[in-house]
Length: 202
Image 1: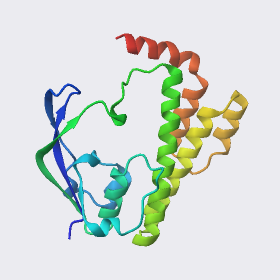
Image 2: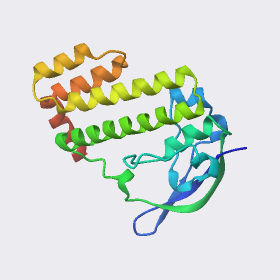
Image 3: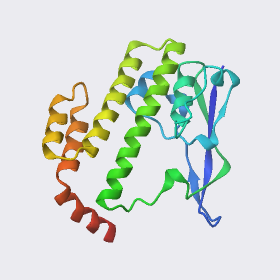
Image 4: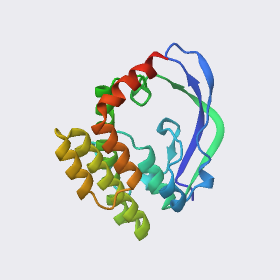
């Protein structure tokens, strides 16, 4: 029995204008292994879930979004499916659709908040994995997500270049491209600030 059903939505501006149809990923094409490699595009406002998906246990009150957590549960239970029709209006302007034009400091804070949310999400899924009896590869991937989130937060909050170098060197079992990406973003602020200003202008 399928435990989660998603649907498409009408993409609506804050003033009520319909722009387009926003398509959810076709969840019939996803399983646990594919989800571990790449998360599908979904939006929780268009989700319908079974009671037994909720009976797994409570979600953390600190969890900012439940979308992927519910999908994680569903993919390890009865699966998920998508109704490829827009069944509701999804208004723009919420917390998940903030202006993408940022200064360096604003962007840094958003990255820190995103890392905190990623840590909370991985913690929730690891708790659920014990109930669901998930395979080792799922558990290991979520542990990597937690370590990466801690690294990103600490790197962006570090006060000195020496601290950043130390964090970079001692971080283990974290994807190399993410280590380098956040290290250079944190240490090359003199480069990123003018580039971001130019990007916002154009």
